[in-house]
Image 1 (cartoon, rainbow, N blue to C red):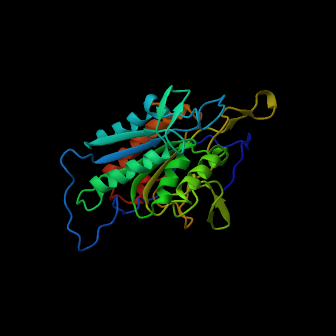
Image 2: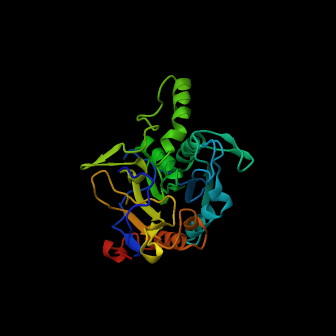
Image 3: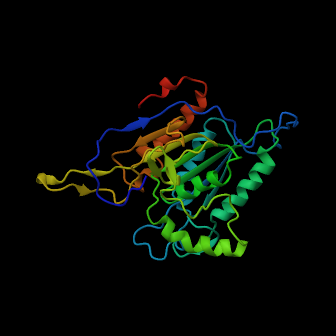
Length: 311
């Protein structure tokens, strides 16, 4: 569903958490009934988190080249990993920038890995710790802003791989296609065509659900067991009766859905006191909700949906 940047209508100031029961899907690739399953190698992680940061901050000239993996340095990725470690799980994390491939970022002043490197890591994780395993490693994706387009495209490109949890922090599609179109075109030319089963370069307003069109970032695909979504505040009323004042330049205002129109396994929280970047900070209201939800869902995986009601 297309949402361009605007002040928008004044939104409610309730903290919203919409939910339903997680899908009973095991992580990884389903094994053949005749395939003998073996446990993971000793020391292999219980959970692997692949995290993609968003577009470089304002002013941002030349995106996606300046983009960098700020979710690592900000502590966001470690906070999410900590929620799983608190459950006694072994976790391994990998951070990526919002870019098709590896590049040098002027912001971070170092080489940054991109989508193609994340894709390669996924293949390694699945081959070593998921496929044919009796206790497969859980696959978790974390994205912020433009990063959510990359994580959802990874899911979209590999429907045969099951992802335990996809985490979306205020996903934004605006400018994503413009930023990346040239990079996809060059990559397709180098590969002799599109190597994926769908055109990942087209990710905004491409999925039809009923009569609506949705961005890829707003779809919880069938191979995603649970989708946790945190959105930032909208606008606040102007003082003295004047027009509303923007308090948050960009924000995600579309609740994620399944392709069948349901919200099975999707949990959405709107942090009405925090902006687009603020909610990614460890200890923020949004991050506290997220880490609590991770632990609650893990500890109550078989509990009925009503236990996770609107809260």
